Each structure stands twice: as structure tokens, then as C-alpha cells.
Image (cartoon, rainbow, N blue to C red; front, side, top):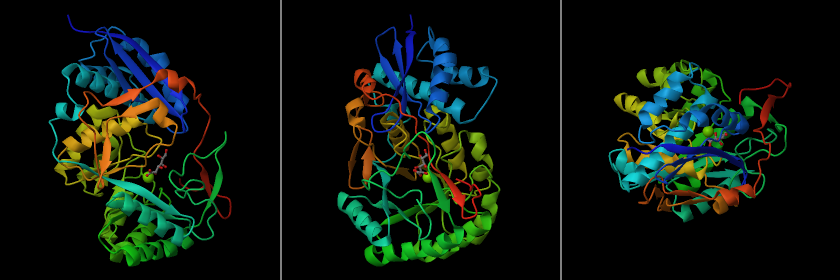
Length: 405
Ligand code: CS2
Ligand code: MG
């Protein structure tokens, strides 16, 4: 007789920042974990799982991953959206973890095996000014990174998002029970960004990939101007140049610049990126395992992207837990159209709660050979770090208008 799911529970903890973790147990004594963290809206997903999904999982065959995905997605009637897709993702990833453990194989082997030896990752270098940014790029190169995201505080823009206030390693989350109020000024930014790239290229040359995140702040024609102005510095990509849900905005950007474009961390399904992919409007799609319905759904999205020459560039900020990072690495290693993987790392004491088999060397990561995802989750340790309400900041233009994120 096939195994059954005997328990499914949600653990909300804050070892450095908030994480929502789904734990699934089977009648064979196998435990699988999934990441259900949705930064700033954590408890909505926790409730979705606890109140509406976990009871439905009890008694189901853990081996039937695709059927369970369809059951939760189609069965809910209400489709897509970040809360739903994060909840479904957590179940899906936990079941892939179980399947790998039952098979005695790392998940990437179940996905067709490795298509490459390692997963190219990019780290985050940021600075409160350009000299500080240059120091941090250098530190990344010393650690072996071959690709670095560069962000610097824009002169006159108070609290530029993406720039560390404290330890220089992880700039999030915003503190406090209300979103921090920051400012935004497009004119200064558009003049400043090429100077940042110029300074980094002058110092380090063209042997390192440079990436940059715009955090959805521009209009399409402004994004087109940014892309053109950065062309001499050959960025690997500019990310989220315009608000992501407007897929056709990318037609305008595309028509004006050869700078590669990346988008997708706030999008949750293959339908959210259909136009972007089928019209070849972007070069990299950044949807993540934990916000896009899990390995089962993201795999389909990547397969569609492959048909149109679009590569992966998965979101991997610190608000995606080590469980999500491991799941991403397994998929990255297996798919043919892998591009790059974000690697922000996790703030201590996350290491007291999560252990992982993944590793970094010479700019590449590998998920390791442990069966399943290769991630351990210590529920007792998690209980020492209770949930803390935290929100991402908001940005206002100088006249007070709330700006796009
Ligand atoms: C960022 C993220 O990593 C990125 O590219 O855009 O830091 C993003 O702001 C957070 O993950 C939001 O939760
Ligand atoms: Mg981003």
C-alpha cells in the first residue's frame, strides 16, 4: 500500500527575518519541507495553509505531486496570486523533498539530472556612496563571485532601497511594524546610474558580470533611456525596470535598447509571463520556486521560456528561506535554459534553524548530493525565534505621491 500524508504543519519563525515553513510527514516516517514565506504578508500564507490546505493533505499519497498540485490549484476555484501560489509552492516543494528522500536521490536527479557542473550565482554589492560600493564589489571578487549586483545610494534620495544601512551584507528587512517611508527621484537616478557603472568598470574592467535592480521605479521610456545609457558598460541585465505586471511596457523598452532585461520576482504563474516570453520581450525570467507554485509549475514556465530563448534568473533574496534556495538550485542545475541565480545568503541565526547541503565555490553553487532537497529544519530551534511583524518600505516622490515600488 502506498504511503499517506499523516501530518502537515506550518511553522512561522524569525531567525534573523521571518520565514514560514511547511512540514509534511508521511506514514513511512519521511519528512519533507517547503518554504511558504511571502515577505511582509507571511501570516496570510500561513493561514491559507493551516486553515485551508493542511487538512486537505491528510491521507493523500505523497508520491502524487502533480495530482496534488492540480487539486490545490484547480480545486480552489480562485487561481493565481502570490498568496495562493506561495501556499501551493510550499506543498509542492515539500512533496519533491519527500520523493527525493524516498528515492534516495537529490531532487535535481529526479528532474532529469545535471545539465551543468555548477550554478552561476550573483551576489549583492551596495554602497552608501560609490567608494563604498567599489570596496564591496572587491570583497565579492575576493570571495570568488563572477557576477555582482551593484546598487548605490542615489544622491538626494533618502533611504535608497537596495542599500545596506548596517552590516553591508543584507539590506532587508525594513524594521518596525509599519513600512518605512523613503523617497524617490527619477531624474537624479537616471543621471547617476551610468556614473556608477562607469566607476565599477573603470576599477574592475569587463571580466565580471554586473547586474542592477531598478525595483520597478521607471516608466517604459525612462527605462529605455536607462538601458541605452548603460550599453557601453555591458550590464548582464537591468532588473524590474518598470512595474512588472504591465507586460506590454517591455515592448517600448525592448525597441530602444540592447541592454538585457530581467523581470518576474513579483509574478506568480506562467500566465503572468506569457506575453513577456512569447514576444521575447525579456532575456531573463526571475520568478521563484516559492512564489510561483513550486518546482512543478516553475519547471513548466522555464520550459515555455526555453522555446523563446529566454533564460532563468531566479529571485534569491534573503526573504526566500534556505528551503527555497535549495529548491531553486536543484531546478537551476537541471534545466537547459538556466541563466543565473541570485544568492543573497541568510542572516544569522538562520543557521541555527536551517541546515543545508548546498555549497559555493568560485562563483558557482551546487545543491549537494543529499537525498531530497538537502535541507534540515529544526522546529525546536525555530520556536526560539517568534514572528515579528515587518514590512518592506514604501517610496514617495518629492511631492509626497506614493511611487511604484
Ligand atoms: C530584490 C528583493 O533581490 C531582489 O532582487 O528585489 O530584495 C526584493 O525586494 C525582496 O525579495 C522583496 O521581498
Ligand atoms: Mg529584485
